[in-house]
Amino acid sequence: MVIGSEYNRRIHSTTGQAPAERFSASLESRAAAGNHRRVTDLAWFNALFLLRESRTVTKYGTVKLCANAYAIPGLRPRSVVEIRYDPFDLKKVYRFENGSCAQTLEVKDLVNERAPALPQESDAPVSEVSADAARYFSRLRDRHAEAAASKSSPAYSLLRKSAP
Picture 1: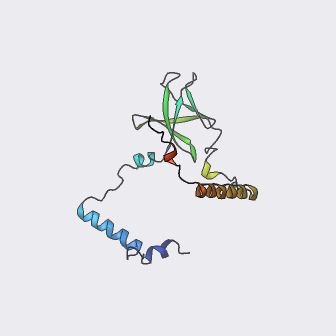
Picture 2: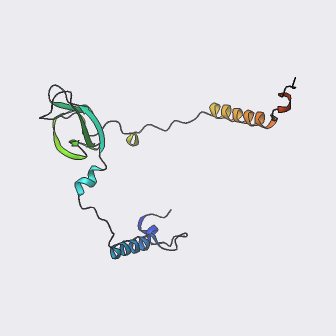
Picture 3: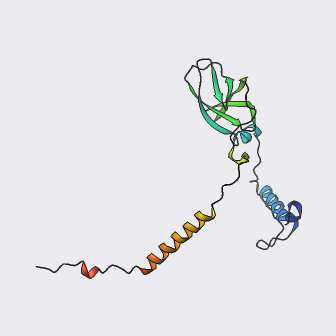
C-alpha cells in the first residue's frame, strides 16, 4: 500500500504525472491566469461545514440542542431560529439569519460537549446477513431467473377476436 508523500511523488498511470507535480502546475497556471481563488473569509468558510438545525425559542429565552440549553436574548418565545454548530464542539453554537451569523449563543446548561449521535462515530458493528438468509435469497434469485427464462412471449394472435 502506498501512502501519503510516497503516493504524491509516484507517476500516475493515467495522467503521466506525479500528483504533487500536477497540483503545483495547476496552482502556477491558475495564478498566472489570475483566477486562482483563495479563501479570504475564514469564518464564512468554516460556517460551510457547520450542521444546521431549526429550533424554537422557549418561554425562558433559550433554545435546546443535544440536551444543552443556550441563551438567546432579544427574541420572542416560539420564534423559530436557524442554529449552526460543530458537532464535535457544542460549547459554541451560532444563530444564523439570512445566511450570516447573527450571534454566538451563550451556553446556559451544558450536558453534552459533543453531539451524542453521529453515525460515523458509532461503534456499533455492521450487521451481517445470516447464512440462512443468504441461501434463501440466492434460491429466490435462481427461481426468478428460471421463471423469466422459461416464459414465452404472449400469443397475441389468440387475443384477436374475429370480426362479425
